[in-house]
Image 1 (cartoon, rainbow, N blue to C red):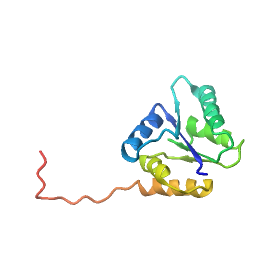
Image 2 (cartoon, one colour):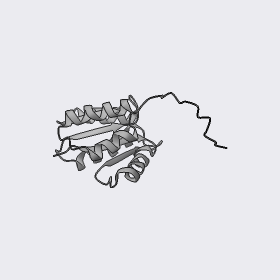
Image 3 (tube, one colour):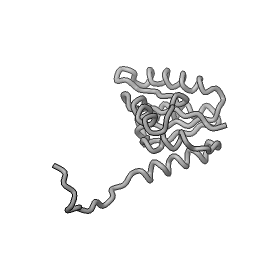
Image 4 (spheres, rainbow, N blue to C red):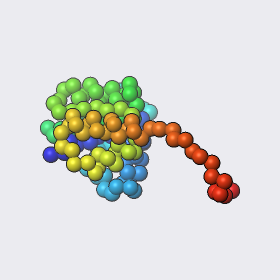
Length: 137
């Protein structure tokens, strides 16, 4: 069975990245988002994350957070230490979410490592050559 996925962020980034991913890859309704509001703080975010974890029961679980060391990441990491087969990844990007949705990888460790590699490969600054024939005004 494929691990469940929770995406978590400051503000509504997690919700919005799922909307963007669904435009490209289709239905994302099996992915859970946990959005930290400014007023949530540690306690409110913990309540939201506990609810998300509980909805996954004992299934293998990957949590992708927007920012290493931020409250959503820290809360997910704390809770991950209380259950087996749970991995937390930081540095969420759109490519990671799309690849999760189309991947057939079922091992939680292999899938989390794969998603990290996809995220890293998606960050680049390619050289852009000038095209004299291109007329954009």
